Length: 160
Image 1 (cartoon, rainbow, N blue to C red):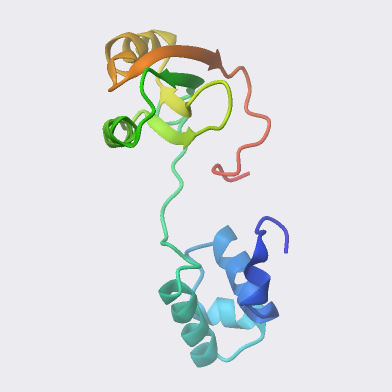
Image 2 (spheres, rainbow, N blue to C red):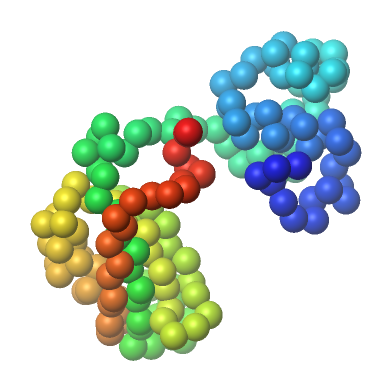
């Protein structure tokens, strides 16, 4: 199944996988339309959909907003090194970074730095202010390196 991977296939049959594929492309699809696409009755399709939600395969539904139309087309990736990587320090950083709406993604990394952030702002000036006044003073941050995006070649979080 394209776009969804992992070992989940062991627990899901072909119909479950098809349901996940369809709703991942169109979360607003009606159960009637979904049942037609996967070849089940409306009742069976609804039951499977609820089971997939209950079992945690479907975490939720949301609207995808156009960041460019919202004036948030400046993207930067930020490598963050911490001065302390003990559990308490990591927790403090994690709690603080989750509070920042400009940070779209934050990943702990194994390598030459500790975290990789995807940050979205209005422009380079807004990013510079965020970096100097917010990101660099997060708990235990000792160093940052910024990589500004020139063009998004593929972004699965945006409809194409």
